[in-house]
Length: 395
Ligand code: CAA
Image 1 (cartoon, rainbow, N blue to C red):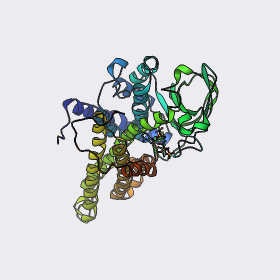
Image 2: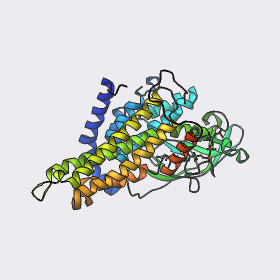
Image 3: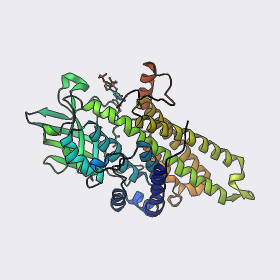
Image 4: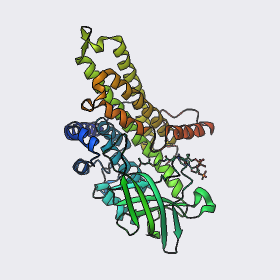
């Protein structure tokens, strides 16, 4: 086994770390307080190539591997998860989905703009009455010959108000169940696309989460991704990779809280010595360090499996499940280490604690990850491969 990062991966990690600490950190408390979309910061993320990291250079992307993307997500999430979720949705749901399953015309028309950051994309699966139960889509895409007539409402859409392109899952043939769902590429300035108000959220408050209404939107047939009825599979396969991005976000949030707790515990004294020298605190730090390392191995392994072209659906679900629970548990502990200071905004850990919660919810709740994992185990996947010469399966 070989755990060393390549020079390129180390450079990406360092660039993301510097960007997060120098550019994102100074205004993060105010953006969170005011729910202010990080427009300038996203512009800089575009310029640094963080918006289409894994897309082939042929379509204007960085041509990097999944692990590089994970490293960048982790560093940015240590400071600002509003920025990292904007990045994550564009990279692993929209760009990856389009590059893997879109046709050449769709890639030339949309992916080139999304990978370079000229445009931002959103992934529109969740509905008011179809969150975890994603096959119960109420949004309809009626086949009108050379176009689909799209009607319905989507909920909790990250990048909802700031995107130019939506990938929208909609039911074309109800009789066929999930095999009757299509994924349509919708431009947000088309007639009938209505962007609802921005949600006032517990965490990731600066990110742009909206309800979207589609009222008689005419979507050309050329904008359907894959064959008729492929939309649900498209969403599931794309989310398998998206979950690696959210797992990396959770890992970063946990790491950010741990770094702050460690530094604070070495500065703050009580009963005549730094609180880090009290077992009550040092054991908390030991637990944080141990569980973060375990989560890191799981997240990096999921990324590695994806890069090897092997089956990664179980690995990504496990990584997201575990990393998000670690993030929640240890951000709470980081607040505790800070005592009263942890409860005020200036010390950052309360924000990390609020941001951690969503990683247990979006791109599949922890309960959904357990469904994915248990089904795969029961189908015979007892353990995940540690190393293999031969790719077992593509996407
Ligand atoms: N990978 C590949 N294919 C999958 C899959 C996966 N992880 N999960 C399901 N499928 C396939 C199944 O094989 C099946 O195909 P066949 O019928 O051809 O065999 C098909 O999809 C339907 O699956 P099920 O029969 O298992 O359907 P189900 O209704 O019993 O369960 C579910 C499906 C796994 C619970 C699914 O609904 C699910 O993942 N729900 C969670 C949805 C989710 O993650 N939403 C996140 C919203 S996006 C977001 O949050 C983005 C953002 O803005 C941050």
